[in-house]
Length: 162
Image (cartoon, rainbow, N blue to C red; front, side):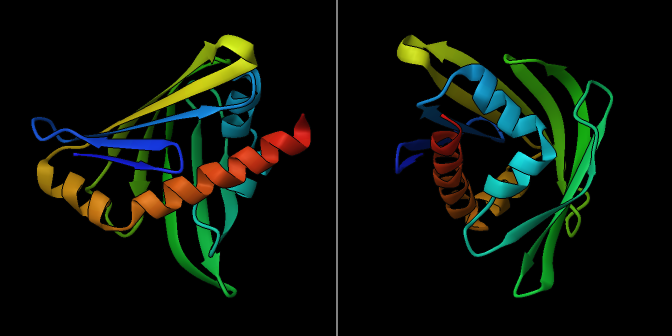
């Protein structure tokens, strides 16, 4: 199954418990990468517009860890955490991603930042989970809204920095 929303492709493979997200940005890989490793920038764009992201731990290096919470109307509604397994500047991030409410649902995520002509970037996020039930739960959770709106906010942030 493939969903394409506002230029964001979300592919759910029926044969493996994975989700692939592909999005192109009008910014260089260095800029898109920085927005993924700088906690102040990350908090400005990740997730849906209806939440505010609060970084609680952030050490964006190979072997580091991260955590953030989403707040709505002053109340925490969700929190997430994981580890940075590999941080290769401007090229790749490998991390785990876990929702605190579902600690057995850890995902291994591989983010690649490919340089395109004209100073653009293609970001590919491959998220692999343990089983199809977990994957289907993530997909049905409304993650597409968070991904799509988050990338729209990232577009806006990158345009400001240009």
